[in-house]
Length: 221
Image 1 (cartoon, rainbow, N blue to C red):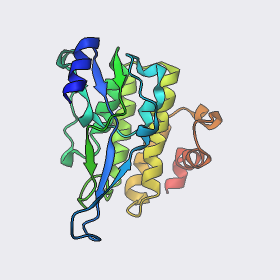
Image 2: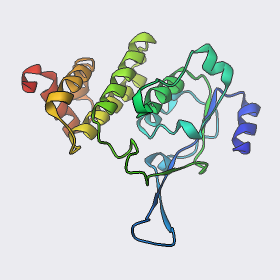
Image 3: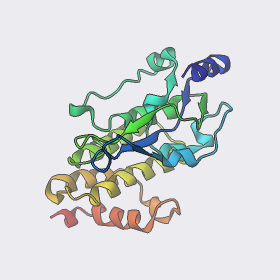
Image 4: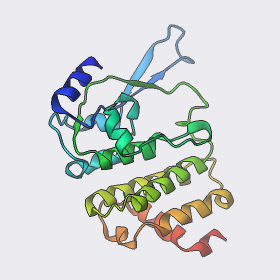
């Protein structure tokens, strides 16, 4: 991480962002602790080793919020009053933190070097979703950020809405999804996402179908 720190100082960045690599140890298949390294989707992007703003590369808003592999300027965080949401269990709280820092930063550098590994070996980890309310509440917090920050850039909004629909798709495909408990939260999310996403090629047919279903509260009854 010393290289990242040096580059951050040299460029005067608000933060330096690196992708996350997933690590899954096959403890149940191997007694010698062998591991399998699976790169994240974000690692497929070309490294942008020049300062930029998120509007230039908004697709970064769709990838894993690897805030633990970032270096942030403390004055940037203090000035913008950016803090992690104190949610029970802290599940998925890196999502709103990630979006707020990306959208408010005036200078970002992206690197595809591996500096951090996420070990998906804990069955109770938030990655192994059991409580479907968690990603839905985080999606609502993203939309609250849009409103409170007065965000109007259509390029950035498009990808934030896409991220919210990805949260809905993750939940709807989950075995623990409960339509009675989780359906109203999904409805609240889609009610805050404009209908023009239905004509946007960024959104998949499945996402558009989910949007149509949950936009109508009668489908929750």
